[in-house]
Image 1 (tube, rainbow, N blue to C red):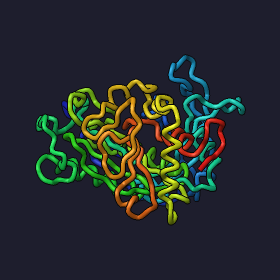
Image 2 (image 1 turned 30 degrees about the horizontal axis):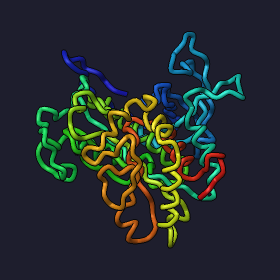
Image 3 (image 1 turned 120 degrees about the horizontal axis):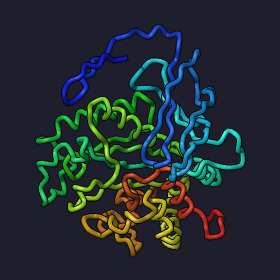
Image 4 (image 1 turned 90 degrees about the vertical axis):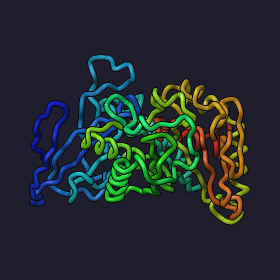
Length: 372
C-alpha cells in the first residue's frame, strides 16, 4: 500500500511499511495481452502459499480475444502455467503467469495464445533437450518515448560504448541493476545485462534455459521491468522507437540455441546441420514470427548496416557479426560444441513465436519430421 501526494507534474510515492502477518498470500496474475507486447494483471488473495503454479486456482476475466478487439469482450479463463516469487511484495507472495482460454470452448484456442503452440512444438523435440538463451534490448524513456539521455546522442556511434562506464549512465545503471536484482529474487534464470549502443538503451539476458522456460522468464522479466518503470515514472520501449530510426543502431532480440547433441563433444557438426536446415526454411515465413507487425518491420530493420543481417540473404559466420543471420561464436567453434546465435528477431518480438518457429526451422523437415 502507498500514500499518494499529488504534485503538479507527478505522483510522489511514499511506501507504507506494513508488516506481513503471514495469514494471507497475494497472487498477481498476469497474461500477455492480445497486442502480444503488453500485459494485463489482476490481484487475488488466497489462504495458503502455492508450491507451484498447479496449486494456483483458475480465475476468470472479461477481455478481448483477438487483435480486432470486438465488443462484447468474452469471458476468458486465466489458466496458471508458471510462477515466480514477487519482488515487489516479497515474502510468500507470487507472480503467476497465465494462458488465456475459453471456459466453454475446450477445442478452440484463444487466437493470441502463442505459448500453447510453442509448447506443443517443444514437447515434440523434448528428447533433444533444446535450450534457449535470449537477449532482450530495450529503451528507458520519458512519457513522450524519448530516451532519457537522448540530448547527448552523437551521430557517430562508438562501437565500444556498450561496455563503457561514466557519463550519462548513473541513474540508468542503478535502475537496470535494480531490475536484475528483482529478477534474481523472483527466481528467474538471468544471465546478465549490458548497456547498448544508443543513449538509454540497455539489454537483459535470460538463460540458457530448457524448453519453454526461457520464453516464460523473458515474459516475467519484461513484466517486472514495466512495473519498476511504473514506480519511477518512466516508460520502457521494447520496439525500435521513432527518434532512433535514423541512427546506425537497431534494437534486437537475439536468440541463442543449442541441443543435447550440440552441447556434447563433436557438437559443432550438429550445429552446422541445424544451420543448413534453417537455410532451407522459407526465410520470409520466419520473419512473420520474428516481428509482431507480421514481418513489415523486418524490411527496414534488416538492412545489412552496422552488424545487421540482410533481409534477402541468408548468411552464417564464425565469430563475425557483420551481416550474419546465424553466428557461431568463436569460442564455440574453438571448443567444437555449444550453441548458435540467431541475430534477426526484432526486439518487441513474441518470445514464444520466435522460439517456436526457430525450433521448427532448426529441427524439422518440410513434412514435419524431426531431422536433427
